[in-house]
Length: 334
Image (cartoon, rainbow, N blue to C red):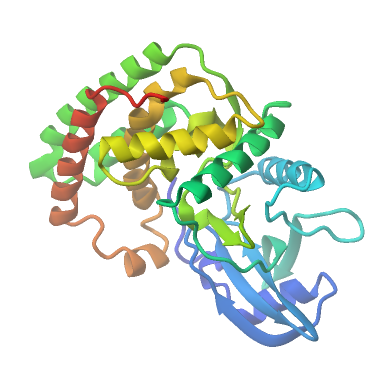
Protein backbone atom coordinates (compact mmCIF):
# COMPACT_ATOMS: atom_id res chain seq x y z
CA UNK A 1 0.00 0.00 0.00
CA UNK A 2 1.42 3.36 -1.02
CA UNK A 3 0.46 6.76 0.30
CA UNK A 4 -0.25 10.07 -1.34
CA UNK A 5 2.46 12.49 -0.12
CA UNK A 6 0.09 15.43 -0.56
CA UNK A 7 -2.53 14.12 1.85
CA UNK A 8 -3.20 16.31 4.93
CA UNK A 9 -1.73 13.74 7.37
CA UNK A 10 1.72 14.61 6.01
CA UNK A 11 1.02 18.32 6.21
CA UNK A 12 -0.29 18.29 9.78
CA UNK A 13 0.31 21.81 11.12
CA UNK A 14 0.76 22.88 14.77
CA UNK A 15 -2.42 24.95 14.70
CA UNK A 16 -4.41 21.90 13.59
CA UNK A 17 -2.90 19.77 16.36
CA UNK A 18 -3.73 22.36 19.02
CA UNK A 19 -7.24 22.91 17.67
CA UNK A 20 -7.87 19.17 17.70
CA UNK A 21 -6.78 18.87 21.33
CA UNK A 22 -8.87 21.88 22.33
CA UNK A 23 -11.90 20.33 20.61
CA UNK A 24 -11.92 17.87 23.51
CA UNK A 25 -12.29 20.62 26.09
CA UNK A 26 -8.67 21.43 26.92
CA UNK A 27 -7.03 24.85 26.70
CA UNK A 28 -3.56 24.73 25.21
CA UNK A 29 -0.81 27.12 26.24
CA UNK A 30 0.47 27.04 22.66
CA UNK A 31 3.52 24.87 23.31
CA UNK A 32 3.88 21.87 21.03
CA UNK A 33 6.67 19.34 20.56
CA UNK A 34 6.79 16.70 17.84
CA UNK A 35 7.83 13.35 19.32
CA UNK A 36 9.85 10.57 17.71
CA UNK A 37 7.17 8.66 15.83
CA UNK A 38 6.99 7.83 12.13
CA UNK A 39 4.08 5.43 11.71
CA UNK A 40 1.70 7.92 13.31
CA UNK A 41 2.18 11.57 14.19
CA UNK A 42 2.63 12.15 17.92
CA UNK A 43 2.92 15.47 19.72
CA UNK A 44 3.30 16.74 23.26
CA UNK A 45 0.87 19.62 23.66
CA UNK A 46 1.09 22.06 26.56
CA UNK A 47 -2.09 22.62 28.58
CA UNK A 48 -2.89 25.72 30.62
CA UNK A 49 -2.34 25.13 34.37
CA UNK A 50 -1.94 21.37 33.86
CA UNK A 51 0.50 18.73 32.70
CA UNK A 52 1.01 18.47 28.92
CA UNK A 53 -0.95 15.86 26.99
CA UNK A 54 0.28 13.49 24.30
CA UNK A 55 -1.78 13.62 21.10
CA UNK A 56 -1.49 10.69 18.70
CA UNK A 57 -2.80 11.21 15.16
CA UNK A 58 -3.40 7.94 13.34
CA UNK A 59 -2.02 7.27 9.89
CA UNK A 60 -4.94 7.03 7.43
CA UNK A 61 -5.85 3.56 6.16
CA UNK A 62 -3.47 1.67 8.43
CA UNK A 63 -6.00 0.62 11.05
CA UNK A 64 -9.77 0.62 10.86
CA UNK A 65 -11.79 2.26 13.63
CA UNK A 66 -12.62 -1.23 14.94
CA UNK A 67 -8.94 -2.17 15.13
CA UNK A 68 -8.01 1.03 16.95
CA UNK A 69 -10.85 0.60 19.44
CA UNK A 70 -9.75 -2.99 20.10
CA UNK A 71 -6.30 -1.72 21.02
CA UNK A 72 -7.88 0.86 23.33
CA UNK A 73 -10.18 -1.73 24.92
CA UNK A 74 -7.20 -4.00 25.61
CA UNK A 75 -5.42 -1.12 27.35
CA UNK A 76 -8.52 -0.32 29.41
CA UNK A 77 -8.80 -3.96 30.51
CA UNK A 78 -5.22 -3.87 31.75
CA UNK A 79 -5.56 -0.47 33.40
CA UNK A 80 -8.68 -1.65 35.26
CA UNK A 81 -6.54 -4.43 36.74
CA UNK A 82 -3.99 -1.78 37.78
CA UNK A 83 -1.32 -2.90 35.36
CA UNK A 84 1.30 -0.24 34.54
CA UNK A 85 0.20 0.51 30.98
CA UNK A 86 -0.36 3.94 29.45
CA UNK A 87 -3.95 3.81 28.22
CA UNK A 88 -5.70 6.47 26.12
CA UNK A 89 -7.92 9.01 27.81
CA UNK A 90 -11.71 8.92 27.55
CA UNK A 91 -14.06 11.89 27.39
CA UNK A 92 -17.28 12.24 29.36
CA UNK A 93 -19.11 10.15 26.74
CA UNK A 94 -16.63 7.32 27.25
CA UNK A 95 -15.01 7.83 23.82
CA UNK A 96 -11.29 7.37 23.27
CA UNK A 97 -11.01 7.70 19.48
CA UNK A 98 -11.65 11.30 18.47
CA UNK A 99 -12.20 13.02 15.13
CA UNK A 100 -11.36 16.54 14.07
CA UNK A 101 -12.26 18.25 10.80
CA UNK A 102 -9.92 20.89 9.37
CA UNK A 103 -9.54 22.14 5.81
CA UNK A 104 -12.02 19.57 4.53
CA UNK A 105 -9.96 16.73 6.04
CA UNK A 106 -10.76 14.45 8.96
CA UNK A 107 -8.11 13.44 11.47
CA UNK A 108 -8.46 10.54 13.90
CA UNK A 109 -6.56 10.96 17.15
CA UNK A 110 -6.25 9.83 20.75
CA UNK A 111 -5.01 11.63 23.87
CA UNK A 112 -2.72 10.27 26.58
CA UNK A 113 -1.43 11.60 29.86
CA UNK A 114 2.29 12.24 29.75
CA UNK A 115 4.39 9.65 31.57
CA UNK A 116 8.04 10.19 32.33
CA UNK A 117 10.63 7.48 32.69
CA UNK A 118 13.71 5.92 31.18
CA UNK A 119 14.40 2.76 29.27
CA UNK A 120 14.84 -0.38 31.40
CA UNK A 121 18.33 -1.74 31.96
CA UNK A 122 18.09 -5.01 30.09
CA UNK A 123 21.40 -6.19 31.57
CA UNK A 124 19.99 -5.86 35.12
CA UNK A 125 18.52 -9.15 36.42
CA UNK A 126 16.09 -7.30 38.67
CA UNK A 127 14.74 -5.30 35.74
CA UNK A 128 14.38 -8.46 33.64
CA UNK A 129 12.54 -10.26 36.42
CA UNK A 130 10.16 -7.32 36.87
CA UNK A 131 9.59 -7.08 33.11
CA UNK A 132 8.74 -10.78 32.96
CA UNK A 133 6.50 -10.41 36.00
CA UNK A 134 4.53 -7.57 34.38
CA UNK A 135 4.31 -9.30 31.00
CA UNK A 136 2.92 -12.38 32.73
CA UNK A 137 0.11 -10.22 34.10
CA UNK A 138 -0.44 -8.58 30.71
CA UNK A 139 -0.67 -11.95 28.97
CA UNK A 140 -2.99 -13.33 31.62
CA UNK A 141 -5.45 -10.65 30.50
CA UNK A 142 -4.46 -11.02 26.86
CA UNK A 143 -5.48 -14.68 26.95
CA UNK A 144 -9.02 -14.01 28.20
CA UNK A 145 -10.32 -13.62 24.64
CA UNK A 146 -8.99 -13.02 21.13
CA UNK A 147 -8.87 -9.88 19.05
CA UNK A 148 -11.70 -9.87 16.55
CA UNK A 149 -10.37 -7.27 14.11
CA UNK A 150 -6.65 -6.97 14.72
CA UNK A 151 -4.25 -9.14 12.69
CA UNK A 152 -2.31 -12.25 13.60
CA UNK A 153 1.48 -12.37 13.44
CA UNK A 154 2.15 -14.97 10.77
CA UNK A 155 4.82 -16.06 8.33
CA UNK A 156 2.78 -14.98 5.31
CA UNK A 157 2.33 -11.31 6.20
CA UNK A 158 5.65 -10.75 7.97
CA UNK A 159 7.73 -13.01 5.74
CA UNK A 160 6.49 -13.91 2.27
CA UNK A 161 4.57 -10.69 1.64
CA UNK A 162 7.58 -8.64 2.75
CA UNK A 163 9.96 -10.54 0.47
CA UNK A 164 7.61 -10.19 -2.49
CA UNK A 165 7.38 -6.41 -2.05
CA UNK A 166 11.15 -5.95 -1.77
CA UNK A 167 11.98 -8.31 -4.63
CA UNK A 168 9.54 -6.62 -6.99
CA UNK A 169 10.45 -3.00 -6.53
CA UNK A 170 13.24 -2.17 -4.09
CA UNK A 171 16.20 -4.54 -4.13
CA UNK A 172 18.87 -3.49 -6.68
CA UNK A 173 18.91 -5.73 -9.76
CA UNK A 174 22.48 -6.81 -8.97
CA UNK A 175 21.36 -8.26 -5.61
CA UNK A 176 17.90 -9.52 -6.46
CA UNK A 177 18.82 -13.14 -7.25
CA UNK A 178 20.86 -13.44 -4.06
CA UNK A 179 18.03 -11.88 -2.01
CA UNK A 180 15.35 -14.16 -3.46
CA UNK A 181 17.46 -17.29 -2.95
CA UNK A 182 18.53 -16.38 0.59
CA UNK A 183 15.08 -15.38 1.81
CA UNK A 184 13.60 -18.59 0.38
CA UNK A 185 16.11 -20.60 2.44
CA UNK A 186 15.49 -18.39 5.46
CA UNK A 187 11.72 -18.80 5.33
CA UNK A 188 12.03 -22.57 4.94
CA UNK A 189 13.95 -22.61 8.23
CA UNK A 190 11.32 -20.37 9.82
CA UNK A 191 8.54 -22.68 8.63
CA UNK A 192 10.39 -25.70 10.03
CA UNK A 193 10.88 -24.00 13.41
CA UNK A 194 7.19 -23.10 13.70
CA UNK A 195 6.31 -26.69 12.84
CA UNK A 196 8.71 -27.97 15.50
CA UNK A 197 7.22 -25.63 18.11
CA UNK A 198 3.82 -27.16 17.43
CA UNK A 199 0.43 -25.67 18.12
CA UNK A 200 1.49 -22.90 20.49
CA UNK A 201 -1.14 -20.59 21.89
CA UNK A 202 -1.74 -17.17 20.36
CA UNK A 203 -2.97 -14.37 22.61
CA UNK A 204 -3.42 -10.62 22.56
CA UNK A 205 0.13 -9.29 22.81
CA UNK A 206 1.88 -5.93 22.81
CA UNK A 207 3.56 -6.94 19.57
CA UNK A 208 6.46 -4.45 19.62
CA UNK A 209 7.88 -4.91 23.08
CA UNK A 210 11.34 -3.35 22.86
CA UNK A 211 13.02 -1.12 25.42
CA UNK A 212 11.86 2.06 23.70
CA UNK A 213 8.24 1.16 24.47
CA UNK A 214 8.88 0.69 28.19
CA UNK A 215 9.28 3.59 30.61
CA UNK A 216 11.03 2.62 33.85
CA UNK A 217 9.85 4.75 36.75
CA UNK A 218 9.66 4.15 40.52
CA UNK A 219 10.99 0.59 40.06
CA UNK A 220 8.11 -0.18 37.72
CA UNK A 221 8.07 -0.78 33.94
CA UNK A 222 5.30 1.25 32.32
CA UNK A 223 4.33 -0.19 28.93
CA UNK A 224 3.42 2.30 26.20
CA UNK A 225 2.41 2.28 22.53
CA UNK A 226 0.20 -0.74 21.92
CA UNK A 227 -0.25 0.40 18.31
CA UNK A 228 1.18 -2.90 17.01
CA UNK A 229 -0.92 -5.09 19.32
CA UNK A 230 -1.98 -8.30 17.59
CA UNK A 231 -2.53 -12.00 18.13
CA UNK A 232 0.89 -13.57 18.68
CA UNK A 233 2.70 -16.21 20.75
CA UNK A 234 3.73 -15.00 24.20
CA UNK A 235 7.41 -15.18 23.23
CA UNK A 236 6.87 -12.26 20.82
CA UNK A 237 6.76 -9.95 23.83
CA UNK A 238 9.75 -11.60 25.51
CA UNK A 239 12.46 -12.18 22.93
CA UNK A 240 13.16 -8.50 22.23
CA UNK A 241 14.22 -8.12 25.87
CA UNK A 242 17.18 -10.46 25.24
CA UNK A 243 20.33 -8.51 24.40
CA UNK A 244 23.83 -9.42 23.27
CA UNK A 245 25.33 -12.37 21.42
CA UNK A 246 26.83 -14.42 24.26
CA UNK A 247 24.72 -17.57 24.60
CA UNK A 248 25.39 -17.98 28.33
CA UNK A 249 24.33 -14.40 28.98
CA UNK A 250 21.20 -14.86 26.89
CA UNK A 251 20.34 -17.97 28.90
CA UNK A 252 20.65 -16.03 32.17
CA UNK A 253 18.52 -13.18 30.82
CA UNK A 254 15.87 -15.59 29.58
CA UNK A 255 15.65 -17.37 32.92
CA UNK A 256 15.17 -14.11 34.83
CA UNK A 257 12.37 -13.06 32.47
CA UNK A 258 10.59 -16.41 32.54
CA UNK A 259 10.93 -16.75 36.31
CA UNK A 260 9.08 -13.46 36.71
CA UNK A 261 6.61 -14.36 33.96
CA UNK A 262 5.64 -17.63 35.61
CA UNK A 263 4.50 -15.81 38.73
CA UNK A 264 1.27 -15.04 36.86
CA UNK A 265 1.19 -16.95 33.57
CA UNK A 266 2.67 -20.29 32.56
CA UNK A 267 5.29 -19.95 29.86
CA UNK A 268 5.29 -22.71 27.24
CA UNK A 269 8.94 -23.79 26.65
CA UNK A 270 8.06 -24.93 23.11
CA UNK A 271 7.90 -21.25 22.18
CA UNK A 272 11.68 -21.03 22.56
CA UNK A 273 11.86 -22.59 19.08
CA UNK A 274 10.38 -19.30 17.82
CA UNK A 275 12.91 -16.78 19.18
CA UNK A 276 15.20 -16.66 16.14
CA UNK A 277 12.39 -17.25 13.60
CA UNK A 278 10.51 -14.26 15.00
CA UNK A 279 13.69 -12.20 14.86
CA UNK A 280 14.10 -13.19 11.20
CA UNK A 281 10.51 -12.22 10.41
CA UNK A 282 10.97 -8.87 12.12
CA UNK A 283 14.05 -8.16 9.99
CA UNK A 284 12.15 -8.89 6.78
CA UNK A 285 9.10 -6.95 7.93
CA UNK A 286 11.15 -3.90 8.94
CA UNK A 287 12.63 -3.45 5.45
CA UNK A 288 9.20 -3.92 3.92
CA UNK A 289 7.75 -1.36 6.35
CA UNK A 290 10.28 1.22 5.19
CA UNK A 291 9.47 0.37 1.57
CA UNK A 292 5.72 0.72 2.13
CA UNK A 293 6.20 4.12 3.74
CA UNK A 294 8.72 5.50 1.25
CA UNK A 295 6.12 7.87 -0.24
CA UNK A 296 5.75 9.54 3.16
CA UNK A 297 8.08 12.59 3.04
CA UNK A 298 9.22 11.88 6.60
CA UNK A 299 10.81 8.58 5.60
CA UNK A 300 13.35 9.68 2.94
CA UNK A 301 14.21 12.55 5.28
CA UNK A 302 14.82 10.38 8.36
CA UNK A 303 15.94 7.11 6.74
CA UNK A 304 18.15 8.47 3.97
CA UNK A 305 20.35 5.37 4.13
CA UNK A 306 17.47 3.11 3.11
CA UNK A 307 17.18 1.89 -0.46
CA UNK A 308 20.86 2.39 -1.23
CA UNK A 309 23.20 -0.27 -2.61
CA UNK A 310 25.10 -0.23 0.67
CA UNK A 311 21.96 -0.76 2.74
CA UNK A 312 20.85 -3.79 0.74
CA UNK A 313 24.33 -5.30 0.83
CA UNK A 314 24.38 -4.99 4.63
CA UNK A 315 20.83 -6.31 4.83
CA UNK A 316 21.84 -9.45 2.92
CA UNK A 317 24.78 -9.94 5.28
CA UNK A 318 22.48 -9.64 8.30
CA UNK A 319 20.05 -12.14 6.79
CA UNK A 320 22.90 -14.61 6.20
CA UNK A 321 23.95 -14.25 9.83
CA UNK A 322 20.35 -14.78 10.91
CA UNK A 323 20.10 -17.87 8.72
CA UNK A 324 23.08 -19.30 10.63
CA UNK A 325 21.38 -18.52 13.96
CA UNK A 326 18.28 -20.39 12.84
CA UNK A 327 20.40 -23.53 12.65
CA UNK A 328 21.88 -23.18 16.12
CA UNK A 329 20.41 -25.03 19.14
CA UNK A 330 17.51 -23.15 20.73
CA UNK A 331 17.83 -21.49 24.11
CA UNK A 332 16.66 -23.58 27.06
CA UNK A 333 15.38 -22.87 30.55
CA UNK A 334 17.75 -23.75 33.37
